[in-house]
Length: 113
Image (tube, rainbow, N blue to C red; front, top):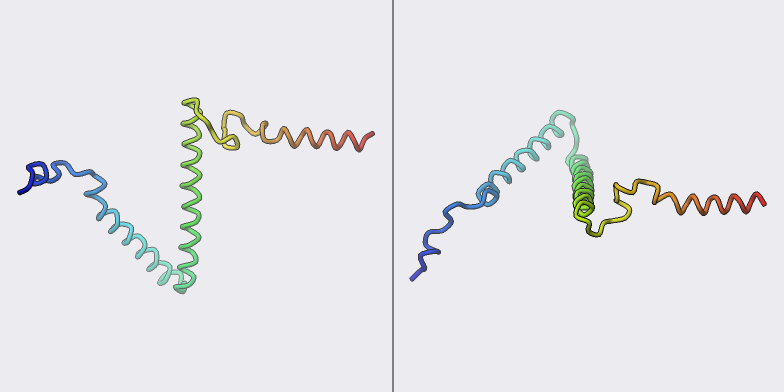
């Protein structure tokens, strides 16, 4: 005997759950098309295609990771929470270069004496 809530299932399934197969098929089609164009149009070998795909994946991961860090840092600045000091856009580059300038001035003044 099943409860009534389980027998009906989802009335309104989440969009991501209902569309994940479509997203996977589109991703597979795009990857196949890119492989086909690289193989037939540019005459690349499979090894070269795989190497290029790895570089594209690394660049994509770096771009997405950087965007996540910058967006979360901006949100933390607006809410007044802790931020990553080296990513702080409000402070600018002056806070990063100030210690170097002090050491450089000290070393230069020692040379002048």
